[in-house]
Image 1: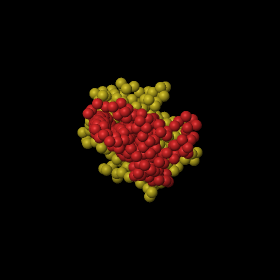
Image 2: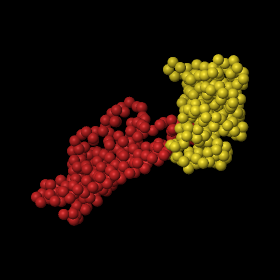
Image 3: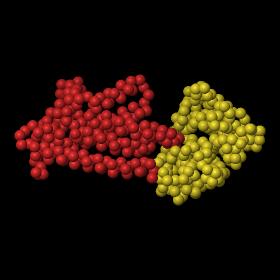
Image 4: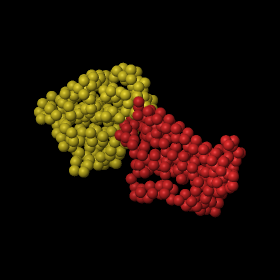
Amino acid sequence: MFALAPEELTAIKLSLRVALWATAGSLPFGIAIALLLARGKFPGKSLIDALVHLPLVMPPVVTGYLLLLTFGRRGLVGAWLADIGIVFSFRWTGAALACGIMGFPLLVRALRLSIEAVDRRVEQAGATLGAGPWAVFLTITLPLILPGVVAGMVLCFARALGEFGATITFVSNIPGETQTLPTLIYTFTQVPGGDAAALRLTVISIVISFVALLLSDYVARGVGRRVRGE
Amino acid sequence: MSVEIAVRHRLGSFSLDAGFTAGTGITAVFGPSGSGKTSLINAVAGLFRPTDGRIAIAGRVLFDGAARTFVPAHRRRIGYVFQEGRLFTHMTVRQNLLYGRWFCPATERRETLGHIVELLGIGGLLDRRPGNLSGGEKQRVAIGRALMASPQLLLMDEPLASLDDARKAEILPYLERLRDELGVPAIYVTHAADEVRRLAATVVLMADGKVAAVGTPAEVLGRSSLTTR
């Protein structure tokens, strides 16, 4: 029962790769947007806030279809990117993009909360010691928000691992290229005799998610202790 | 080295319009809560931009409202000891102390870790984290951290206010030592007359956002009705 077929192993590896890239790729943008939302004062801020959260509330198929329109080969951005050799549609990179965008709101929420919790007076202390804005960010703000960074990355990773609707709409379900764990499980449920394989992959999904949660809890506790100065 | 300060600023219904010149040694800025003492030294540190005025240290202009000069806080080389310490909790005491050195040009560095540690008696704390230091220890580390950046002026905002009498008595001798041993001019904000008498050469008495009197502690405190606060 627990011997994995090659296509299952491929899907597992692909899922992990897609989720990791989705998380890593979202992180710099997530930090920038979270900083902007937590500290910026400008008109239209709630508009940006709403835009960031859209993927959380829209049907994933809609997000996927919008991605197809924008980043497809003939899409607004996609056609231009294809000219310089970057293709998202029907590639695993597209799956990573879709998963990254779906996980983005969760990442930004966690980051924003931790940024808002940073005592700005401590950053002022850094400035009086000669640290410019970038130095303050790198040596004070970033270390202080690390627990939030870890939490946000885990949420984003978990969301990416489970992403189905946007992925299948944008990059389809191509074995070895865009067939991730959820889409393969879906495929197995659609064919006669696929139950055992679907169940096997389900268990594996649960195990991966569980390990990710335990690991993040362990890391976050260690980081939290350091940050609180104990 | 002389420090020229003139600050005009409006904050809602409160208006700050104060100025004085400070020389070497400790200049106390003394007055009741709400008299604008902290706002005044925050302006000196560059933590906010006043409406108007002029701030200069040894001829180097840090702020000039008329000329639109405003040097940001991180380029002023002014040390600041905050009332609540504001230590970096994610660093060890040693890392806190060495923080300002990274940003200080090598030629401007006057202080060594060994000297500051000895001066403030914090040798045993170096590898600890701020989270489990006592209030008095935290303030000594905060003073050391500010001095390690080799500042041209040291600001202290009621550094003893959050401590009990025993802790105050523990720190006052260290403040006297650094006044006598280091050549850095210091501005010391307080509402405690005993600290003024013990530490300051000059007192600037503030009331309601304005300077009410300037002089030696004996002159100013002798005729002030605020001494018991």
